Image 1 (cartoon, rainbow, N blue to C red):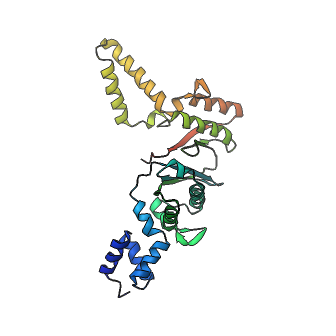
Image 2 (spheres, rainbow, N blue to C red):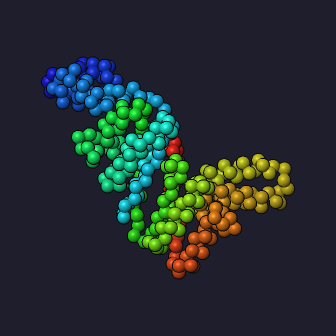
Image 3 (cartoon, one colour):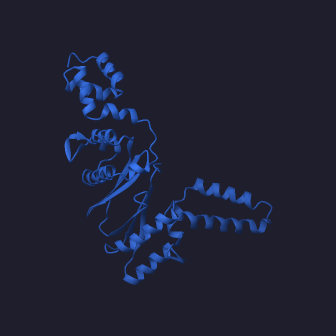
Length: 284
């Protein structure tokens, strides 16, 4: 350890383009030998992968893996759609989604440090770098989430356009309504709601919509302005709130009404309690 100096770490950093921390780890493993450390970095795919790290990753796939108790969502991005459809890339995200459902990491950063279960000699980060080296494109793990299933709820999962859009819907009141929940997940994919219900719309958003509406109806008689405003805000809520939207399979009913009708059919108190809609590239 004594022969590993800041200068040698910097020298390896300048030579390989790999981060200081990884360079130091490689030097420790190589007992301070820069040549051996450089070989270690290359074998792990880090030295060649770093050159591709700055490239934009606008394409990708969202993977979903379901167990009895969890649903794991994972988005991995690549530079081109061609690579996103590549067999190696698809296997990569499939394996990672399975591991996420098992280990339940709190963040991408935490997950990246885990040992890769299929090859424990590698971390997830090292596995990703090896794939970059193999495929020749920048690949980034963009986001992940674990949905913990509730005992009294059903879950519908829908993947659209080969994983470009993935939606999940949670319905409380029954564990036997996964098929119905999936129909609602298909609706979420098609109609892209932003909120579940009116109360979920932030006040700042409501004020902005009201300001826009007031400009649009400027010059109207004062006695009808408020009525028009109420109508416009209601129309806005119908567009962005899932429960208010017209159901894609029956435009004569709102999603809320469809859920209520289903409750009567099965004599159970169903409630659409939550939804997730992921689209590739939308990581905010």
